[in-house]
Length: 370
Image (tube, rainbow, N blue to C red; front, side, top):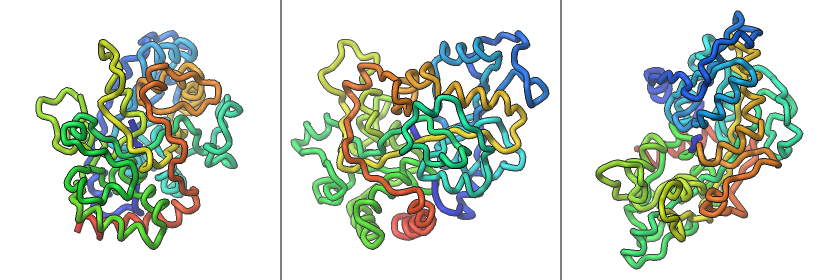
């Protein structure tokens, strides 16, 4: 899920990213064939390496279709939350670990572009992608792949048991009734965490968001490093298979988290056990880009094209719980039925994010982590 950014990068964040280990996972979705069809840069390599965050997922059959169509197999290198993965890519940009990076979003995009991570490439089928998500349309250094809304999620069971209405807005979260209930992610290591900060800045303005976070801190907000830790370990509403559930009934996650808790459940429930506070949402857009210095540029371009195909786009909702960007992609019924509809998410222009992000992250660290 996304993941989905920070500061010019503090020495601590750089050190953390530098010691992070990228787990190499040969794609189980590839066909494993060696039919010699793949050619191009990289000495005719039949493997294309995708660098991404831990939440990247695709169906085996879909990756097998890519192999069948192109002759390339996909190797995936996962590197933690999106924030950590982008940091790692910047640190290794002179010797990139792969051919394509997926998972940089609009909260982190300017940092990646300013550091020269990507080579320009105009992907096929961009005509099916709305202009408002093509944030680098003039240069095509990145290609939009998906979108999603970062929002506070709540554990319906907790609030029912405690006869308490769940929060719906940013303002609700600082009320005494919700003291010690919220867990969020560190804005320096997690893109959902950064998106939540940006959502508060969009809501309260440059002059008001700091006071808001002082109130959140006084109201007992908990901060952890990653989305996986927040949702799977600390959130009481998660069904991630852990023996002991977390004790926080509010978590910064996604509007698409509710269907993730329902898929595979029999009989199908009337509603998901997880709800969404739709007045706390910030719109995220994720991109893929051809890494500068990639060894297999031909394979990388083919993979980016495939990620914009209807085959891949229609697979994403129930793999990574994100919305496809193609205007003709059809989402699965369960995703539509249980996912929260967010009509008016908070947004900020790319220029505002680029200009303010580093200062905002520095101020946030001083308020929340000191």
